[in-house]
Image (cartoon, rainbow, N blue to C red; front, side, top):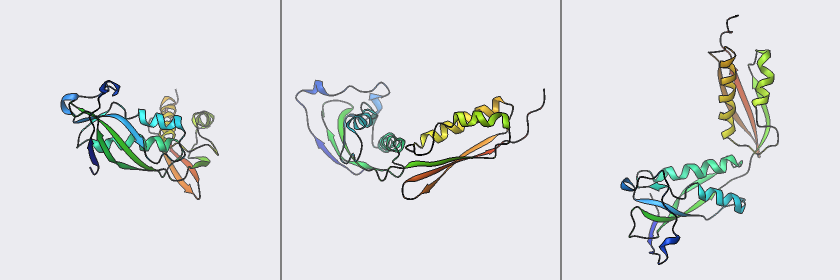
Length: 200
């Protein structure tokens, strides 16, 4: 964990946010009281606020520090910044050394990269005609939309449940992406239906 630790005891400590409900104060060294995005890029003020709130109140120590990066990274990806890089905070400011866990302020540096959009969506391997139309209804991404990687797994899980409910207990669905320079993504879903359901 490479950052500078700065002590700053606040006189008006009541302004410091409280510890989140998910924290275990007995086993944590710090909790996040404020977050600064040093290079927010193209994020709006509202989006920056949402990113900060993902971490406010979270507890961590030296062994769990890296877990703080994941929510910010996935948030940028949900906005189409597929190649975003979130770097470990280079400043950790202790706001009140008398508290335990200690409230801290974190400063992140983010390289958002280009924003990607969907080029097109393809489905391969669908043989069950009764399911085909329902699959497209579950495909909640389309051409020229901002690419949100989290939707890939949502679609895969939804279509898997559709196949299982239709009797295809061996069905496998895989989602893949291909980068089409400069800023587009081909989304491809591949279906292996497996054995046909037994006729009732």
